[in-house]
Length: 287
Image: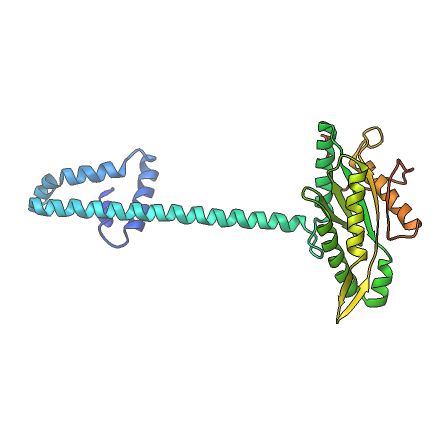
């Protein structure tokens, strides 16, 4: 049953012959036949087999057959190694692509910062970790002032350009370890790892100045002034039983900044909260 398959190893494509041989062995003997061992036995018994078929094999011819068999085996080993390398490289490319797709799924396509879904998830994880470790974390809610007027006066393409410019200013204003996400429309959320309200206020004020002091290009050579209002809150476990509660307090401080004239930051001091801001995807502390 195996003889024809073994003969194929010395004819045509050795790799495909090897595959057919392995498949035959696996199908009939569930892999219990060791192909290399069988090849060695065939070479060992070749003189007796040759005599059976009235074929004369000299020692040189036997050595040539053995050398050829060894060459084929080496070639098969090299090909197998190359195939393993190719598979490994393909897996690395796949892992890299998967990681890139994951990043894309977490990013807002317009501004390049985190999107709403990932912001909710990240904020929930940070909130939980801060509660468990008894550390503090701050949330800043930021909103572009008079954004509707920008869209109405200059068009939605100009509004998109402003959001892109504002997101760059926010990103350049935060510190290593801080986080920024677009929360919807012209709203951004900044998660600040801080030990005091003063630290959060410094980050918020730096962001505000970055935006107010810069001319924002909206295309066709046009540059306009843009301001932003910010509200912040520092984690206090006696008031904040969830990330939504902390973010709602920061949101209330933002509205206080709007009412006070915009282009400013107001830190929450336990302001009376409106309806809690919804965290659509957040899961925190096992709840």
